[in-house]
Image (tube, rainbow over all chains, first blue to last red; front, side, top):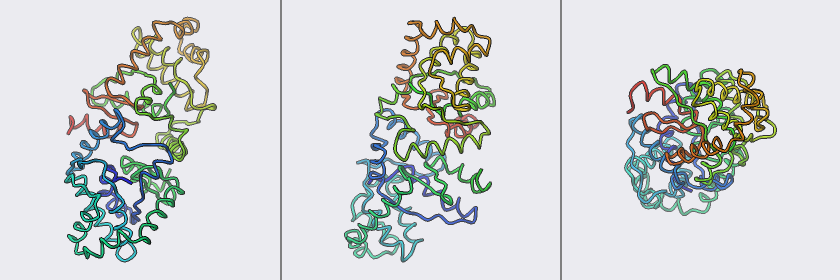
Length: 191
Length: 191
């Protein structure tokens, strides 16, 4: 149920990677906390040693990718509102939903904003010309809430336990550090 | 206290990577289970979903690196005996200690052998011309046992929580998937 910092980095790379190979990435947010419960994992940044390392690693990754990085305070940031807004937009305008997700990721991990609140998400949406009040209402819509639960269960059923998680024709890849492998996998059609 | 499959892959790459940049890798085995306790992590392959994925990922990595891979049965394989044999050799002949570690990794993850038993380790050592009985005795030597405990504590004090784990002039890198980053880091002298 929290936003993943590594997914922020992957979000900025995945479309270019897919396009390079004539593919299209289908974005599907899910509730990470629920998927992590299956493996009994807690939140990364809160773990002793591993938390400190992952923060250092994310800052290093940001410098390498030339992306802004600021750990939001408080952290972690719940992703319920933003994921619901995404699914509300998805069927009507997938490109716009993706752009909203990117802007939320950037507000959260690029500018350190707390994007957990529906109001914050609605304001970011409004910046893309999306109706602020309709967006707010959608995040409280039971059908949208159910959609996010269903997508999360679908992800777990497919074997997803962390984020970011990718499938290329059924082949699973976990972690933003697998993007280079995915590039090779697509270029060589697997191995 | 178990052998790490991902360390097997890293072990076969790290010396060439270091040499490419005029560096030398200092190998230091430690008791992974004890380091993992600090973060509250269990054994990777035993975790739901994540275990299945990591097995698929290791097989894929082996094919990519053109290394043999066979998951030992039973798994995981305890690393106490092999780590002790390593430290016994280290001060006298570091290159030989490294070669023993490589051969144990290959026996374990390349051929699926159970290398937990001191006798198995001593036989692999004998294959390198190392005295079989002296090796067996060393694995039962309290000073060697203490050395391994001390090295494990040293690793944890430095922030190590998983394997393989690397430091380049103090900069930490976790995971065999960070080798490409380490290559860039060394080439660019950090970023």
